[in-house]
Image (cartoon, rainbow, N blue to C red; front, side, top):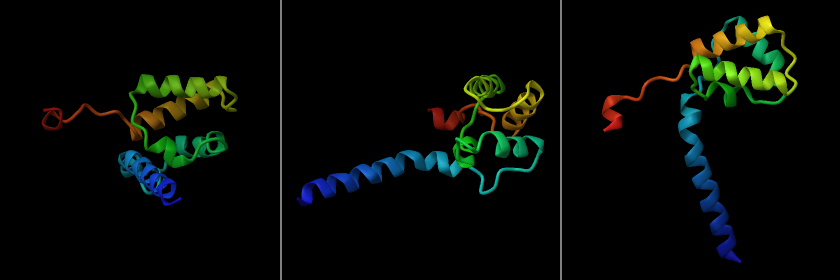
Amino acid sequence: MMRPCILAMISLGLSVLATAPLLAQAPAEPPPGPGRELIERSCINCHDIYMITAKRKTPQEWAAIVGLMADRGAEVTPEEMQVIEQYLAQNFPKTAPDSAAAR
């Protein structure tokens, strides 16, 4: 009886450790900007804001994700999609790996 409990606790601990780097990247509060209001209106119905802001993507990757979400029913105009893409790319860019970390 004790073994399943221990295994569950270990599994939970490992999942928390696996997500810790993503949470550490997420800002305490997303930066202000016109895209933030659009995200709060259009994306937060399905996604937690920190799930979005913890990600780091290239402008092309953000554009693809925003397009996919629009295809899946996010209520945004093409103009709003561009504002969201710019906001995400500016505030949550994918950076090149640190050369020291890559070694």
